Length: 178
Image 1 (cartoon, one colour):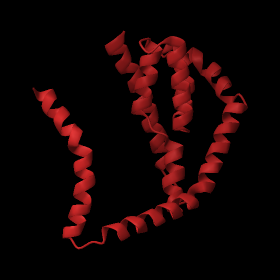
Image 2 (image 1 turned 60 degrees about the horizontal axis):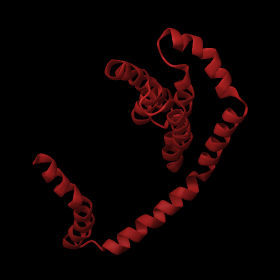
Image 3 (image 1 turned 90 degrees about the vertical axis):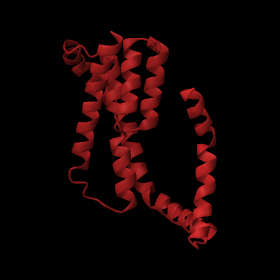
């Protein structure tokens, strides 16, 4: 009964929101179409302004992966993570996730293909994907969009949150799936 109600609501939620915004704007005497096109122009301008930041980040990611630095770092840290009960196979995911969502998605796909979605590695990688953020991408896009060059504590705080998400993903998966 409850699920039927939720399914009924979810079926009409998006069309309701898409219709209610222009109707609300009309009653508030807002020129909805003009406001929309002005916003689209600003979005395009912002997209052009952040291109250099995105290119720099993507080049850095490419160098990190192509140089073999990720593989070396994974091999160095594997003994420590194995002592802590963390599968070394998920380390590339932990390194890539703060850098690139697409790169992390590729690693996740590879882990799920190799070890299976119901394996401990598959569970940890999946939970990690949902509980961490693409920190450097967010900083490049959002800080770049408003031309902030000094990120202050944003990157350390974001990486600390990613580490907490990684550790929590391992802990939660060990509790629920072991």
